[in-house]
Every structure is written in structure tokens, then in C-alpha cells.
Amino acid sequence: MPKIVNHDKRRGEIIDALIRLAACTGLHMITMRAVATEADVSLRLVQYYFTDKAGLMHAALRKLETDSHQRWAERLSGDSTTDNSRKILESFITEAIPDDRQSRTFHLVWLSYAMIAMTDAFMASHPFAEGPKRLERQLYDLFVKCQLDGSLPVEADPAFEATRLITLVHGLGTSVMIDHLDASSAIATAHRHLETVFTPETARI
Image 1: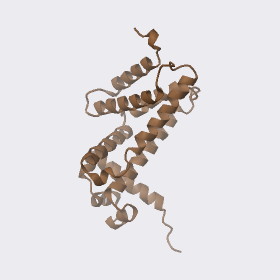
Image 2: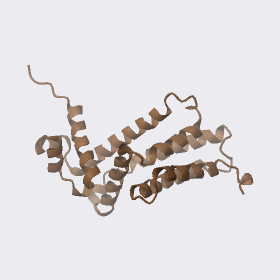
Image 3: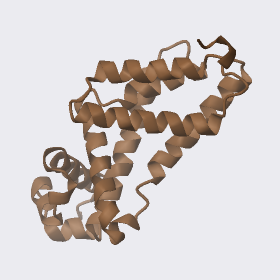
């Protein structure tokens, strides 16, 4: 009988090889041949599944995004307050700040891709910003729910707060990556920001 090939598994192994390399050297140093060597497959096989480096990197970003959302969901599993939108926002902060190998790898790969896209038109043509936009929409929905349940002040703008939170967390994450802040300080800073957002202007000193 002919051997049955699990194409999803092979694609996943190649993507994992790229992620391992990116965590060590950054994306700018990676070639398709280096990924093939790391995955212990032929260059032709890598090119069969991914026609170019940009496509391979985009697939890696999508996998890291999926993994991050899975970890976010796992943080909430078993928590009786999972229907509390503010608690979900707080758990997002904890997941998004890079404080372990997986979250640091996600942050490093995304930053590497963004830096390359700034100077490479071909790379920029791949929609690497789709992930943050999807996340921003999720945060917006959570802020809207908070406003509807009365926990978020009526004067707050959910769209603005979603943009501000994701931007703040990305900046804090980068500060952690370069050892300007430790993860606990970055998380505390983001939580302090969220506390201010949920405090009515009339109650702020």
C-alpha cells in the first residue's frame, strides 16, 4: 500500500523548525535551506508547502497567534469568572506580556517580521498585521460588553481603549524583551492602566 502522507503534520513540522530558528537568530538570518536542515527535510519539500520565505513566516505567525489564543483560553478554563469581560481583559494582559519561552518567541518573531516588512515591499505585501487587527476587534468587543454591564464608564470609547491597550501591551512586551522591565513590572503597569480606564473620570484624583 502507498504511504499515506499527513500533509498538515509535515507543514507543522516545517513551521516549528522556522520558529525554533527564529527564536535563536531572528527572522532576517533565516533561509529556506536553513529551515529544511532544521526540519530534517529536503529544500524541495519546504518549497512544495511554502513557495517563498514570506509565506512560510506568515504561516508561522498564524500558528503562534493560534497557540497564544489557546493559552489565553487555558488561563480562563476552570475560572468561574470567565463571563466577566474585565477578567478576560486582565487575563489577556498576563498572556500577552512575554514571561515564558512561548510568549517570548511569539513576541520576537512578530517583531522580526515587522522590522523586515518596513524595508521589504514583498514581505510587506503579506498581511502580517491581520493578527493584531483580529485581536484588537476582540478587545473592542470585550470593552463594549463591559460598558453594557456598567463596569466601564459611559464616557469611555471602546474602540480607542482597545487600540490603546494592545499598543501599551506590545510596548511593554518589547521593554521586557530588551530587559528594560521585568515581566511582573510590565504586567503590573498594564493592570494599573486598566484600573484607570475602569475608574470614572469623576472619581479620579
